[in-house]
Image (cartoon, rainbow, N blue to C red; front, side, top):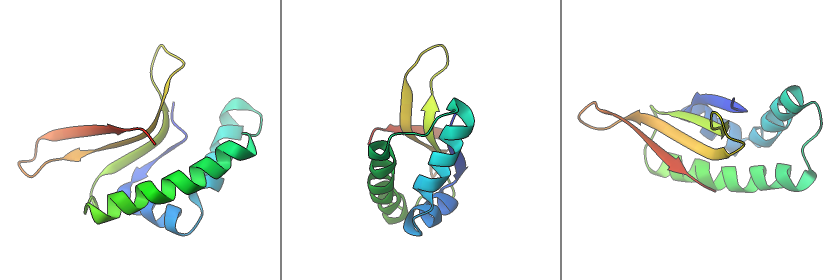
Amino acid sequence: MRLYAGLSTHFVHDAVHNQIAEKLKSAFFKHYRYQPPPSEVNAWRNSLRAMAAVVEEGGLDDHGVMLEYRLPLTSKRLDCLVCGRDREGRGMSRRMLI
């Protein structure tokens, strides 16, 4: 389960245009059937804007991004998962906690 998945370019656009927190809030409600705490929504807004800046600065314009990814068979979630290919075309993923 994840609350957001898309291309890194879409993620950056959503974060820069202050849409990412609302998308996560909506997905959270659809999945859990209650609203996330305002503090979590604010944390998404602030930290994911910073994460978008890192993705953009790093030139990761052809990668995938998943947010609030729940690890199978656990109650743990990854805040942000960036996946793609390196210069040699090998698959890679990086776990980034924000």
